[in-house]
Image 1 (cartoon, rainbow, N blue to C red):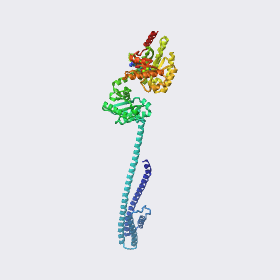
Image 2: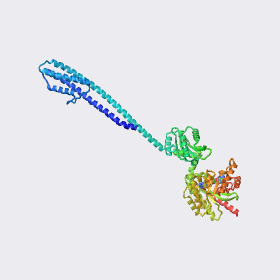
Image 3: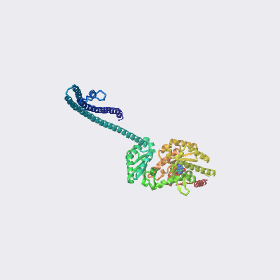
Image 4: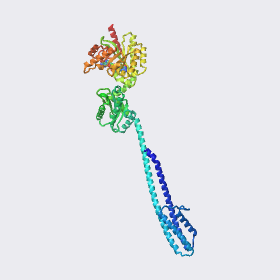
Length: 617
Ligand code: C2E
Ligand code: MG
Ligand code: MG
């Protein structure tokens, strides 16, 4: 089209120029015809006057010459009056006749002057008058024809210009819309996630807010998260992970109705704005979409993916919340079911609201709690089942608020992790343990190795070993009396990094322990690379299971393997005599569980150690 416009433009200009030239010529011709009519009229009138003067014996040669000069110019097209010859035959014939008649009249005037009869001259005068009339009519007719043709020409030119303008305007309008669409497409692309084509978070925030502001319809925000997506990436590779996200976005996008939006907020998380009539139907629809997605077999060998979806319906929110607040609540609802085996969908409701406010309250109180010593270190003994003696302990944090509320770590550890103050807390526990041990050393009392939990965030803080070493040395705690516990999941996430950390910890006189063994994945492979001192079998191993026999085989084999690797074993969460008997039989080094002791305040633990020492003596 651009090319056509480029080539067509000079052609159009040429056509318009030619048409303008022709029109100008026609106008000039018509003007000429007007003059011709006038001058033929002059010839007609002046010739009559010449004859009248001649017949009254008052000859006027000047007038005769004047008529002759006009007649000559009419016939030749050359002269002072600007009269041009025309191509119109009838007019030219009449002019010829008029010229001849005028010549005849001039001869007859000469004859009258030499005494001839005037009758002939008068008769010729009549004839000239008639011929002049015919001449005027013919040129008038011709002029009329040319005027009509000029009008037609102008109309054609007008129409042509109009059509051309329409084409040009049309072209530019089309160009304008094309560019606008292109700009819109580019803007749209900028607001979309490159991998999935879903909206970006920022775009979703603005678009969804606008949409919610524009209607009172029942609306909900859905927060969708894939469980163990990291595992999928690790096991099947990032390409498979990406394909899963793309497919899911595809399925969800196809389900969107007018005004509904989908965004990928981060990694494996999507948010949706949905309008609904009935909550149950909306839930069923979501379940059906998820089922449809699962049936696409995006994972090889029929591996399944679990999706956790939290709903926050606008009508269930008491406060006046913007889109951000709704997303937060949907996310919160989603988190309440994350990693739960049977529940995959949750609606934000009052109980979740209470829980959320509780978290906000605890987060707010955190710093104050640390400042005012509300956090206490409890110790849970690790007992050798063979001697029945306390051989060590694990330090476990407790939060006892000023008003006597007892808050367990399960409730606040994740909060501390979320707001990054866990490192402060870990270090607080570590220093408290060192202080307690130091006091006992000072008093010459029995001291056993104590393990402390160190969260993932603390591990990833560059100077954590230096800081712990400084505290250990400040309190003069001998080597191998302090043990650092990290979870199996932390160890798995960055095995290379952890190998180095374990090495550094050993070099600085710390023991290393892998906590919660059996709750994560790929545990066994890791054991050959990580030079740990202790392995803590998670309580999960000892929960009542359907097949006790199988469970016992596994525990037995794991303990056997640990023994051969020269790693000490601690069984956690042991509550019954039969469990102890079995573990003893398997050669488990230590038992940590309610069967022997619950976690207790440091003073109580100290007293228990003292009692044991006295007994030993
Ligand atoms: P963990 O390190 O695996 O600690 C063992 C948990 O099992 C403790 O829960 C302990 O009270 C509980 N337990 C021990 N024996 C039994 C038993 O026989 N039956 C039952 N039902 N439970 C038993 P607690 O103290 O609630 O701690 C929970 C988790 O919080 C700990 O799991 C640890 O991951 C974390 N945690 C505790 N203190 C700290 C800390 O100072 N720093 C960090 N980062 N995490 C901590
Ligand atoms: Mg632990
Ligand atoms: Mg544990």
